[in-house]
Amino acid sequence: MDIDVVLVQDITSFYWSRLRKALLNLEHPTINIEGLGRLTIRPIKLKDITTEYKAILQHINPKYFHNVHRIKDLEIKIEKLENMSLMLSKQEDNKLNVKTKRVEYEKTKDNLEINT
Image 1 (tube, rainbow, N blue to C red):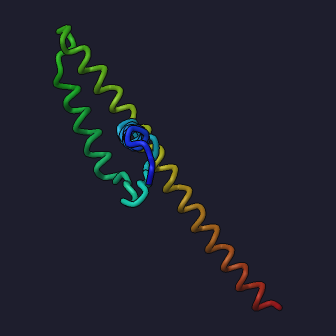
Image 2: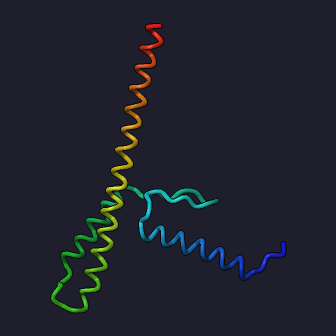
Image 3: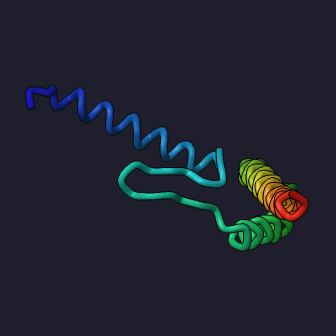
């Protein structure tokens, strides 16, 4: 194929940088990578990391100037993790809601078939 090598490198580097940003910014609980599969966030790991970051944050002394950047960094990470936790809980609620509606539909469908 007559494709410019620089163009291919630019496209792949853009794709992987976009993917890396999506992973670091916790944009969605599930990220699909073409040809490799899905990366999903485990709620248990999310909870563990959040508690670990909160424990680290408690041990940092905010009186010292050199710790201010670490504190802000950890606060941003904790906020992102808590937002992802909310996303996961909403997603789980939606799944349960769909499941209960499906079960109710199946029951009403069976009742309609019996009555006719």
